[in-house]
Image (cartoon, rainbow, N blue to C red; front, side, top):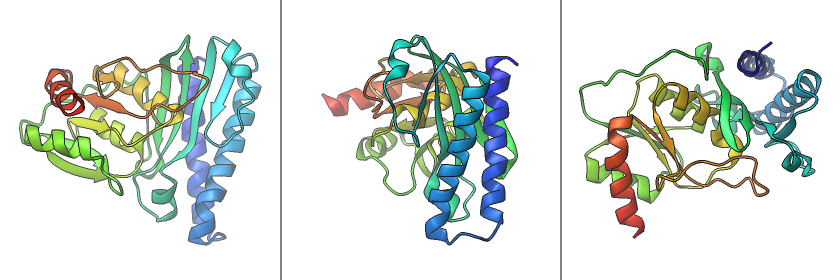
Length: 244
């Protein structure tokens, strides 16, 4: 099985597991998120160690022992991106499975289980411009002030959504034009979305335009810009003017 086929299969299967767990009726809402995180993580970790035993692994829900730092190929996974949305019964959560090679997001899959959809880095989808007002995706609970300011400067409508993967895939699917995040993320939050968005021909970078880099000793990767390529220069100009 190719790397991209494996990523898509594992993300989709983990998503089905999460739907089953939530549909079981066993867990309170408070306990559901933790149970979902742990069950999806166990599946992904065991599956990747079985299928790609020579590769490194970084997961949000697993203590990192540092061994990945010596490896060129490292799988980076978020077993449940949008735990709050998942536990609240909302649709805007995702499963991320990505492969970084020499620090670059080369392979990725993002499952959107509530939509029965998994997008990967071989997806041939190309977003089509809406022709209407620009739409910028932001966190539904803590929209970053910088993103709000850039949206105001560009006359863009703010669209609140949960998971980083759900927001990124909304741009890939043509449901919005810009996803600008400056409120703090980690490598597992954006590696798979970045790989899928790049494959779809979108602009993908840090919020200041610098490249994204993965498999770092410190996985904190606080900001992200995914947008239609023709908008990138304008978004970056407005953002960098705020940061100056």
